[in-house]
Image 1 (tube, rainbow, N blue to C red):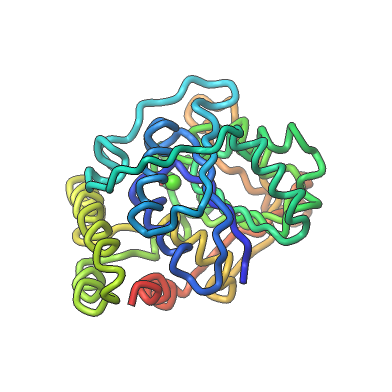
Image 2: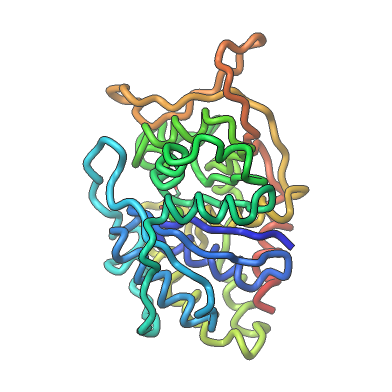
Amino acid sequence: VTKMIIDADTGVDDALAILYALKSPRIELQGVTTVFGNTSVGQATENTLRLLELAGAQHVPVAAGAERALVREPGPFSEKVHGHNGVGDAELPPTSRSALDTFAPEWLVQQANEHEGELVIVAMGRLTNLALALDIDPDLPKKLKKVVVMGGNIRVPGNITPVAEANIWGDPEAADRVLTAGLPLTLVGLDVTLKTRVNDSHLHYLKRYGREENREIINFIDESLQHYFGFYREVNYFQNSAPLHDPLAVIAAVHPELLTYQTMNVRVECEGTHTTGMVVADLRAIPMYDSPIQVCVDVDAETAEGNFLSVFL
Ligand code: BDR
Ligand code: CA
């Protein structure tokens, strides 16, 4: 069983990833840290607490993190994609719980020390919290078992600019710091997440065969995905489906055999006029960058999609 912390900007797909982690028999969720991105850090924290309430997981601690990027102003929040409340305007139960008093980067460092060599962090928002954690403890790379990052794109276009993916673009300085820190890091980018999607028939299947105890969770998934599908339909990208960006990062952490990898030395563009936030992979025969990470280049999408659904059945 993998001890995992999820770092999320709790929007629609982050919520799906957190629910998957709570339901997977392979994962012991140690906590969730939050960051700005899809929505403000305050809203992401509130969404996370409410989501844990919905799932009856009130024992899972939540630590709130960065409200802005290391050096840049936060961009506008993506209400078109994630709704006004970040989770596709689906309703979540109120909760009386609040976040821990500890700032997320501090808490991440504490947890890494407490569970040295055992902890897997799955980061699915801007990488600000992890970058700050590396500043607090430069030995962090030696203490973590694995870091899986949902972000970036290598051989496919970006989603927020022609060449950049939202999580990397939203704090490129933090992303460059994290991707070059020598962490045992796997990058789950758009190359694989756009192929791994949840669709209408999956939702029907879930509603029909989902375990009774998961009824309310499935209703929430259905409601928030209607919004998410709507966005992709409106921009004429996908008709009745949406990518499982963040859930795939969690799946990659516990079912690594579903993806294929290539070691790449990467940097993040922080100064481009048109290319800020682009992950630049040094694919030359003799790379000059020295920051090797594992980049996912392909996925068994059908099995990954099935695995995602299976935890709710
Ligand atoms: C990533 O950006 C956010 O909108 C999603 O939650 C995901 O983490 C996809 O580019
Ligand atoms: Ca996210």
